[in-house]
Amino acid sequence: MTQPIPLAIACGDYDRTRPLFDGRVPIEGCRPLYLRLATEEMFFRAFVHEEFDVSELSLSSYVIRRSRGDCPYIGVPAFVSRTFRHSAIYARTDRIKAPEDLRGRLVGVPEYQVTAAVWVRGLLLDDYGVRPQDLRWVTGGLEMPGRVEKIAFAAPSGVSLDAAPPGQTLSGMLEEGRIDALIAPRAPSCFTRGAKHIGRLFSNFGDVEEAYYRRTGIFPIMHLVGIKAELAARHPWLPASVYKAFTAAKHIAVAALSDPNVLSVSLPSLTWSAERAKALMGEDFWTYGVEENAGTLEVFLRYHFEQGLSARRLTAGELFAPTTASQSKI
Image (cartoon, rainbow, N blue to C red; front, top):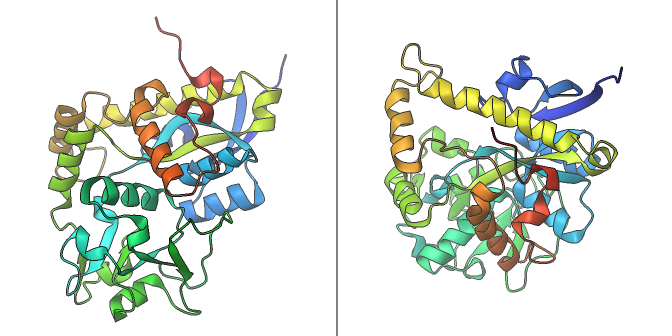
């Protein structure tokens, strides 16, 4: 009898992954060992040290490596992290009132190539006419000094890109007025503790993000799942098994959101929020799959290439194992 293959799987702890962690959803043919890690540590270890058999991956970092032809992973279209990013722009409210005010300003970002920043730069250009070249960029740690790009790349043509001064954090620089705005997946501490003159660029971000979705149909993808390419080549059935399991786990999580008997998440408005999401985005509002997300992926790939991060313009189909492009149906 064939023994299940051992898999070291790094992934964030989310409602849509917990059914994997607790064993409710097995991965066929596999014996998984799960490592629940913070994204910054996980991506660093996945791309710098290539430690894991299967890992949640930054979409932007993956596309950089894929476009260069040196990526150790092949993608699975299980998009375990998605979020709108208008709410990820923080600013000095005494200087910045509107997106157009960012022109000529110093804007911090943990790494220029982080997925959230790719989406933000794209929407600033498409919706407000603000180009990446119109801003002066500063990279560094949000709360700890010394963060560097996990994947080396040359500054895109025409873009002013500098590292934060030694010992400085982006949150501290924003609070002190040394930068004018900040794009970050995590809320900076200067914002969460209510520092003076620090706020979101879009204070009504919920309304702005809903209008964005109605206009574009885009629910931005942040992370995908990747499998070591050599492992997938050795076991051609593996990508489909991993994809099937992640999809089943997601379905369990989404179904729980709509059960009003006992709320699955400690959010009083959960039932209302779930019903509103369905009304806006459809029953399967957190979609996995290549075909189902082709439009969103193509927009991201356009942004990525136009921003000088991709070595070449990729297509959505190039990102994923062929066996995950479609699934059998009854």
